[in-house]
Image (cartoon, rainbow, N blue to C red; front, side):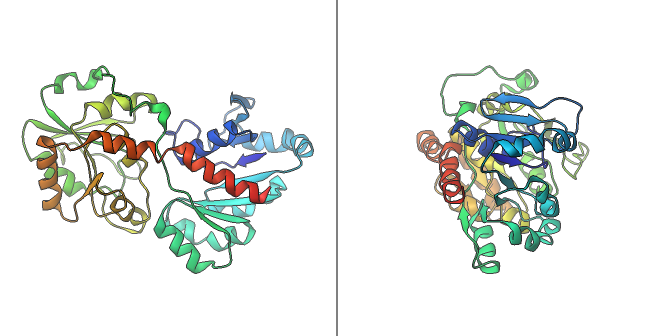
Length: 334
């Protein structure tokens, strides 16, 4: 049995925790995924072997003592080291610390988390090397992010253009899907939006610690957060997909899920000089400077390149592949 303690809600953009827990449930593990948001609802089995806990504290008091007696092996898969001092509540037989972000406030709690963890998983080479150097005697596995084939981005059937892009049908669309966050290079986005009046920038994603200011970016269409199942129609409508990140400790350590999704749709992808995106060359174009970023967009608008090779790369790097790596680790721990 696996418990994922409260960090993010299940419906939050189908990111790494949801993808791994869903696939481990498909492989036969009983998984209890605990939402961060607390609502007065009974635990809900949303997939075979996968139960969503809507009110963690109530579940911990009422249901968990009985469940603990039922299972011989109970483990915790935890992304947030700040939860380390709460994990004893589960009386777990093993703990995996899944390090997928380099947030400064999390690193301060990492030593405590690693002390109780039986293994560490991380999502990028930079995280792997940092953790290997800091905790050389700990079991450490590199499991990157991946593409979810259930999105069907790799299938070539034509999708309907989303209603809020109908008036852009005659324009070339340069798309970004992801959080509008402090690590977005807003100056670069502004330059991209001014390349050509007929080329529009479309941004899809939630505001995260940063507001989108329309006055500062008048040529950018900000559509906000869209349901995960609608993203394929938007991505298919893009001519070029971009990852316009500033370089900082968070972005240097990230393995962007969006890169796999863009590639699965066969789209040209241009990214700033992120280490994990460098490893995706030649399928991803790397642009260390603003001027190079603009030039690569101009090139890919008219010369998109080989979509089949990009799709094949995405299909070689799916969440199913990543979950098999996780399963191999769990077979050592259980």
